[in-house]
Picture 1 (cartoon, rainbow, N blue to C red):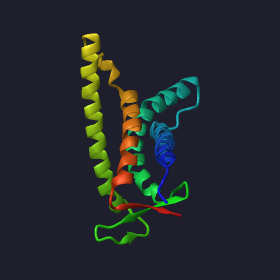
Picture 2: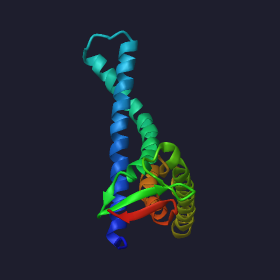
Picture 3: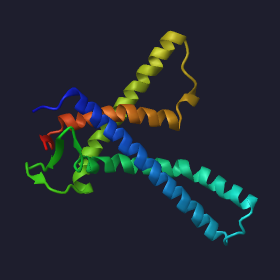
Length: 181
């Protein structure tokens, strides 16, 4: 039995939710650990209003950095989580180049697929940006402000286009088989 059209939508939603939640959780933990480390390094200052405001600033400063790092890690780990997941009674299996099934995929087994995903995603985002800039120039007579290219817009581009590339690679990759559970 072949997967239905909703299967690929569910696969995309699995990817998007898994990456977003894990990146957010990892970033929260990393920023709180960084804040605790700074607090300890500064000698455990007495907890007054000024101390709490300073700790809040440290969390707010470290969170975007931690989120960026954890987002990249989550984008890699989602490929490993895929092989532990069942969607619509279908499971995913990874095969080696020689055609042997890999029982428990390690990160070293997944990095080749992740690099392919990363390469295709980067090119997809670049092509989208060129088309967006060209259409914007044609319709409005000027380019959009450079402030539009920020962390939020890049995150949204990776989440939309990267998810589409993820589904495409899972569907087309010869090392990944989609089987009935």
